[in-house]
Length: 306
Ligand code: SF4
Image (cartoon, rainbow, N blue to C red; front, side, top):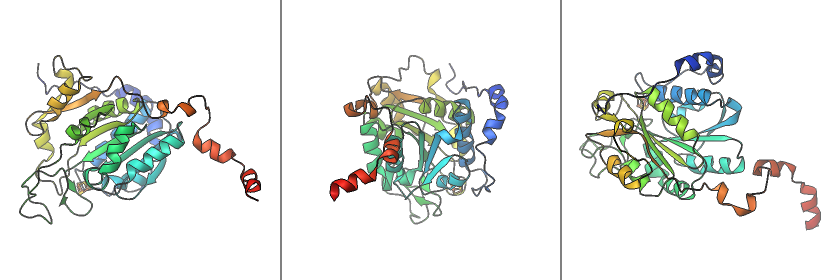
């Protein structure tokens, strides 16, 4: 079978019926990304996935890191939080634990995720915090004019490293798979249908869902333009016998980032139990932490102190 065959269909009928719901996510803010940037498609696909999952703007918290992708923070109408560089996973995880009724989605680039914030990523995976994390991987620090990041190809000249990066790049999916995650997917900013269906699956996962988006940055990343990906991407749905609950099969297909780059839900841990479900003392509690703070009477506490 042709592994390049695209097998996702965006339900355009359903989407057009819900077009007014899509418009609820729109803001009048002017887009500031470069022409051809992958961020446009990623933001659209995220909004499509919310609409198709019947998630209202007031039911979602979008958390943004610093970077070109973070400039979407005023381009989507829902609850938003724009934090410090590399810290978005901890902010989003805290928010999700405090208000379990809120769907929490965090986004960050390759710099924030695999350099400044890699510690937060490791512990969010280990604890299986209940958030969807979208990793924008354009292989450079675009906002600061194209410096090399931890995922830049070895030897490729970038601003501030004109002779090329000396170290091998991190393979994000391979590294995440090594941490016993509960959900790992890879998609591509040039394929809105695939992004939408992948985001929808990630939103329905109960624990930490890691979604790698291979993203074109036509301004600064000349090593892997959109066409480079079109020549290499393949879909795991077309991979006969592939079992995405088998970690070793997942690691095998995740390793290749040069020839056959597989997209899809690469791994789902069927034994995972998300963080909240593991806290014995919260199992019978009906309120969220946010509600409990709101109903706590300070007077009683002050009386005890006096
Ligand atoms: Fe997009 Fe790259 Fe321009 Fe940033 S620098 S807006 S990532 S194309």
